Image 1 (cartoon, rainbow, N blue to C red):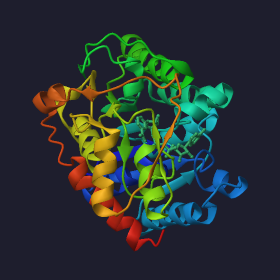
Image 2 (tube, protein in one colour):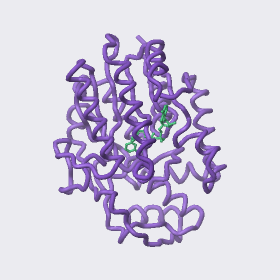
Image 3 (cartoon, protein in one colour):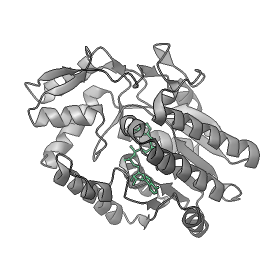
Image 4 (cartoon, rainbow, N blue to C red):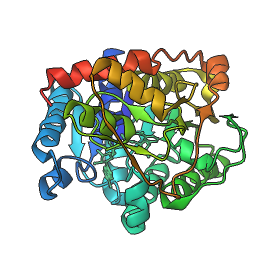
Length: 331
Ligand SMILES: NC(=O)c1ccc[n+]([C@@H]2O[C@H](COP(=O)([O-])OP(=O)(O)OC[C@H]3O[C@@H](n4cnc5c(N)ncnc54)[C@H](O)[C@@H]3O)[C@@H](O)[C@H]2O)c1
């Protein structure tokens, strides 16, 4: 039997890649998105560097959604009646909540909009789903930022969360809201904590995207501090596979998982890999933002054991794949 999936915020970086993957796995996929946060309408309005290139990428996402026959509802998830009406119409077996202001720096500058588009949209969606008999799983995308500064080199899901700043605090609050809906309404959930994502058609301005784009343009890579900072760089295909497994495996029920590559690497390592693929990379050191926590490896042993998660992309494999994609899209 075909299973219905509704992805709130599904036109974003994670969402459109996930939607295409699930469609190929024969799910009946519907996306609900306002296209207004870090997406088509906001890029059209703002005057950002490389605006036309990013608009082309965002258009490419929409073309792929159409080509793969994925249904797209354009709407604002801050509006409860619109969300509940659409949940009632779609009748999803799986609901994946991705809508957010998904960037720590922007969130610290604009807490109001972050709360509204992240937590308000989540609460509306949880409430619309709270007593659906056919809902098998509510998947919430959290973040490695909930841990705050890593106190150990490797953190497991048992680590005490100590978030820093608006984005991370809201992510942690959102996790608690999801588990609260489980306690009160028995909502079946899975929470996923990704980290340092990269991959095709990302316009979010995270470190890998910024480094690769600067290297292609022969501009210096703006490296924070001395480059000895470690991040668990995760290729989008690994995350998408992890989300899929957490949907279909029984042992993910009412559980929280780190879904990353599972081994952190330094910024210097990342730069070396980029330099191997694009020669003569130049680096400029910049000051560290003290609200961004020091991170490291997220243990994925729980996901390996319970849902058979097997990440495939270290940076030696993922970065050349990404650079090839940039070459093909003529950045
Ligand atoms: N990309 C990462 O590195 C990363 C890492 C950790 C966690 N996450 C989390 O995963 C989720 C998705 O991240 P992403 O990178 O795909 O973000 P994104 O910014 O690319 O996509 C978010 C999407 O949500 C939509 N949206 C926002 N507010 C909405 C609203 N009110 N109504 C309808 N749609 C709305 C936007 O239009 C956008 O298409 C977020 O919750 C984010 O915090 C992302």
